[in-house]
Length: 305
Image 1: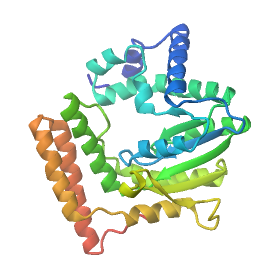
Image 2: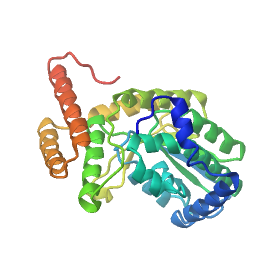
Image 3: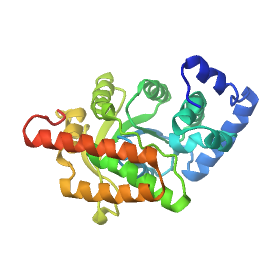
């Protein structure tokens, strides 16, 4: 059922709230799972790495690369994964839409992420936190907190053309759909986030909360598809990370013919599984791409700068 206002969200959320005792038990379980998953152990010189990038860009691959380079492993905080750790997630998943699920679990997620970071930093584990960098205020506070505990901090961003990232979101959806018969992963095309990412990179850069800011691009077969770092602020202090990010996404614009082929392939799969909501989103994205592409050809639509 759609929520019409904050009071309705709050009332519905009360059904699924955990008591302090239930949350403490849940946090213990989740934290122990994260230790095993990231092969984490205490470090004399712990690191906090925020891995950022637009939804669909491939942050998971960058997380994997960062994790490989940490000798003591890490606590990896993937919010899409952590959301499923709510004790009653299956019921919530089955009863609500994608958007409603997000709203109902938002407070739980904030509490869980903060609890994991606080415990991990107390124990001096390395921490890798994924973020779409659309809203970063709470993560700024997390970063400031670990700095006080002596952590080395890094912002590691993956730069991918927004159109490529959005196509990848739909591709991921279709992959899960064909494999599992359903998928609740995000397919919302958020054009505002394209502007928010460089704005937030610049905002955090000016705050000076990171020891280094790096920009990577997608890898290929030669790198086993691990991302390739193309910029480090510590090595290029006279180049702003936000401008480097913009330069890289403008370099990686998707070919029009490739876009159309992939669009047709994705549409065929979504039609086969009667995914009307996703078809509408894909078609809207396709129309906006064509409008923008035609405007760019006529010199009427500037690149992000």
